[in-house]
Length: 250
Image (cartoon, rainbow, N blue to C red; front, side, top):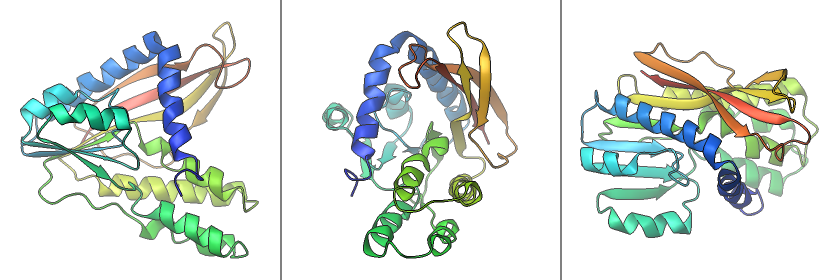
C-alpha cells in the first residue's frame, strides 16, 4: 500500500533534496531543534512522543534521549538507516503508525475496492479519524508534519476522482483539525510550514500559497522563520520555493 501511494519515494526525496540544499536546510533544522529544546524545558521529563520523526534531521535526539526517560518516534515509515542508528539509544522506541489515525488505510482500500463510490461518502468521514497518543505522554512534538499530512492522500485520491477545490479543501481542513485537536494543551510543541512562497531567480516573490487552513491554539511562546527549501529551482521549474515556518509551544 505505501509503495503504491508513494510514501517511500517521498521520504527518499527528502534526503536527496537535503543533500543538494544542505546549507539552507541546516539553518531551518537548527531553528527547529533550538525551539524544541526551549519547549522541552517546561515539560515533565517522563515520556516524549515525536510525530513525523522521519530522518531525524530536525530533531535534537541526543539531548532529548538524555533529558527524558523515554522517547517514542512515530512515523508511517522509519528509514533503515535510522533504525540502525537508534541501536545506540536504549530509551528510544520507534512506532510505525499512521499519524492521521487510519485515514491512509481507509482511503486506499475504499478506492481500490469500489472506485465508483461517491467522493462525498469517502471524504465526509475524514473527521472521524484521529491518532491516539501513548498513555502518560508528557511532551508531544509535531515535527514539520502537519501541513504535509494530506499531500500524498489527496494526490492519490485525484487519480480516481475529479475533485472540486471545495471538496479537497474540506478534506485538508478536517485532517489538520484532527491533528491539532489531538495535541494536548500544556504538553505540546508544533512546528509547521504555514505558507509556500514562490520566487523568481532574482528572489522576487510572485506568489504565496497558504498551507494551514485552521486557527492554531493560543500559544505560550512562538518563533517564525523562512526555510529556503529549494533555491536551485529543481522542485518547480524556473522558480525558487521557500516555506514560511512557525513554531509554537502551547
